[in-house]
Length: 325
Image (cartoon, rainbow, N blue to C red; front, side, top):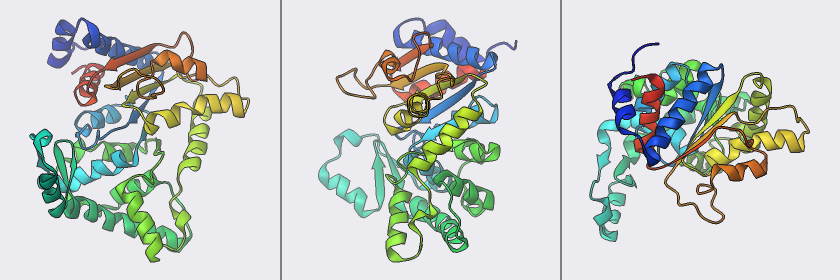
């Protein structure tokens, strides 16, 4: 076995207690699953793409450490926003001090703020819209239907965005996913910038068939098929944040068991959630992993980890340990 790199060495020396120890335990569990022939499913909530998680996630995908992804529509598109407009982004480290007038000033400049980072509308959103619209219309005119991530894969493979790349494409997790044709599921895609743009183009008549982009229920059907046909190897669940990106895919197992009576389908073989949500009544993001046992998502013996911290800090460190960096 190769010697761990400096990041892993540092973490193993200093991260010994509390959430730091949970991070080590979760990473070691991740590695054990893969070393035992298992696979890992990763879910992305929040604004992980705007946080440039691609800097670490892309290499995880390239090295075969990630075997499927569920993400919000925002994370799907924001990786490409950053790819084509990185030089036009603005960081606002004093965002806590912004007044309503300051926020209105950002709006007037078409700078859409995500915490401390402003995404430029014209350079990022509209540039990507033009490339994706061409693919939407091509499919619409041919009577074809595709899922949201399949359209993004088509845009990447077409080369239409290459002249606009402003970062090393190796730092784009979506490009890495497209290169491996990684299984992907994007629940609630309608709740995204491109989803809104798509609705607008349908209303304007630029797209004749609103169903040219397939969405939610078809994603669950494709997830059920993928999970069932690959059930011969254990599949872990590595959840970054909460919400629909995690809740949607983890439900595939109880659906298969309870609604389709496929009781021989195994449960998720590993579970880890990175979340800063306070454990609370009724909160999915704040629910402890054991609650999922009662819903038929995890078993009593499933390895379970929860790291209560900022995912933009924790996820790259877990990935560094898994990669031996």
